[in-house]
Length: 146
Image 1 (cartoon, rainbow, N blue to C red):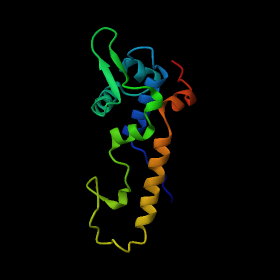
Image 2 (cartoon, rainbow, N blue to C red):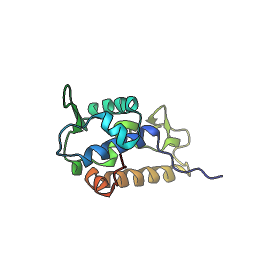
Image 3 (tube, helix red, strand yellow):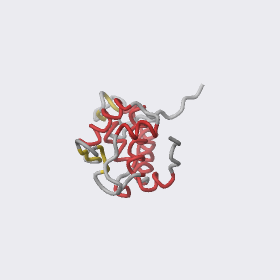
Image 4 (cartoon, one colour):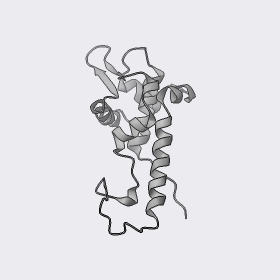
């Protein structure tokens, strides 16, 4: 049985959060509670994700009344690749990595017949993600009722 390309819950929920913030760009801060309701996502998990997105400089936060989060820059200046890297780490072929870092001295290199397959796949995925910006995703997104 074949398996599909897998995106983690962290990546999926984080992308949904960022698209929601892009949809509300220019309208001030957006509460995670509001995002959680609109996207039907757990608010506590969004809090974890937004912390990583803040560390990466993709979102800013405001405390207190009217507080919440907003994109740190225009939606067209944030790519899907930026978001994936902030939440998942580098976009690398999983089979050619060890403990999250590339295998630089792999016993199978040179001469590994499959290495090129995984490196080309990684490159194709990275190029595709970097070509999609949040402005485009926000326009394509259909808001969830609620």
